Length: 289
Ligand SMILES: *[C@@H]1O[C@H](CO)[C@@H](O)[C@H](O)[C@H]1NC(C)=O
Image (cartoon, rainbow, N blue to C red; front, side, top):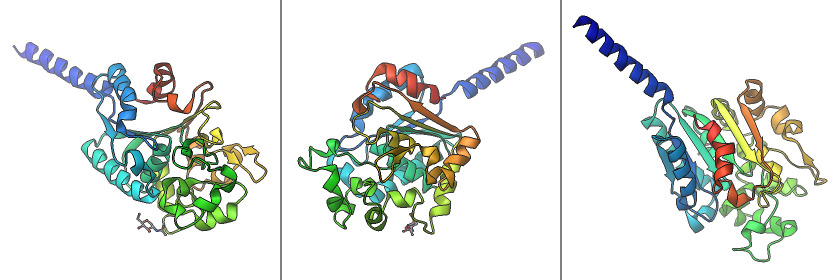
């Protein structure tokens, strides 16, 4: 009897050990601009199929036209959402943000001093800014990158999310003067929040940045890895830029701790990162453990 009991206990213990170690962390997904949670449903299904039992939160805030709302207004709500989901899962969560959603998610993570986001996956997001208008032609058919600064670097332009991360390489003075979003979360403009923005970042166990040369929307595509144009329109690799060399938001700290992963995948269009099965399996699934 005693032996049986002990065996039973051992089996129970090993079961909980198995479920404890094999359980996949919950995943929070943030959609991109001019779309909503439904645009991410293929990715959700893939995750649930390949990693059965994963709890996936497909955030449906700021869908469609609302995705153009001011970046900080969106970040404030995403931050509260991540905070709530995080409290439900003290063991830690994974956050995946696609396109603009990856930029908003990063800002939300940076704004949370005590988050329990273990892994943040930035899926083709303009982390260093955007200097291309093709994705905006639905709303602004005639908008050209060269003159878009006139629209975005203004008080009205800053009411739009895009205005917050529009980064014109040849109008850096105006960018720093008018942009209320990207220069702040990238600590290019120092504020009372700069230290906590860095702390929020270095709390991550893993930062995965995914992008590729055939994206066709993120411009330059290297912005997905914090690389960006200089004033001569040459793309400077992220590790040669101030944001990295001065470790202003902790990317260098993460890299030195082996917590930074950069994924470059060619032949993937912007709209395929979250909708092509082979891409999902190759560049996303390995980081959802
Ligand atoms: C710092 O963050 C708080 C909370 O998000 C915000 O209300 C405040 O305006 C920020 N301060 C600056 C200088 O950006």
